[in-house]
Amino acid sequence: QVQLVESGGGLVQAGGSLRLSCAASGLAFLGYAMGWFRQAPGKEREFVAAISASGSITHLTDSVKGRFTISRDNAKRTVYLQMNNLRPEDTAVYYCAAARRQFPIPTSQSGYDYWGQGTQVTVSS
Image (cartoon, rainbow, N blue to C red; front, side):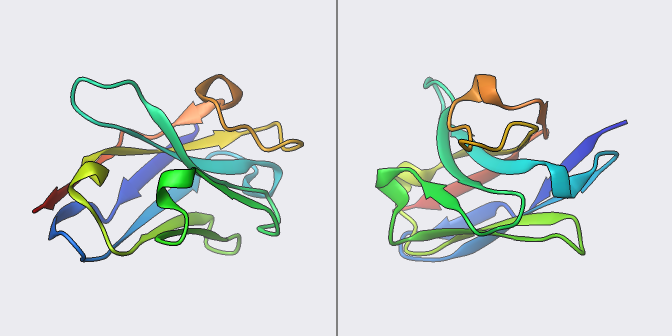
């Protein structure tokens, strides 16, 4: 059974940092691209970042470029989202996802096969 378990969310002031983690089990981690999405209250889920299986290719949505970094540790079967200089508009539930398709790395929800339950990130002004 595939499980993606996110952690690291919380409440932080604007300008602060958080690092989200997503631990994967039940799948051949090296065979999957990994992504982060987020969903703010009343809004649709949106793409945030993605990383190839090897970690050599990453994609970030424009609104987080220069502030967020995605990385992965294949030995630990974990993907990370380092979030710096957080803004109130970053407030959302953040979801981790795994995609069998890797080329190109999917940036839409439909490209992902497995999802975590999400972790809440709240940024106060």
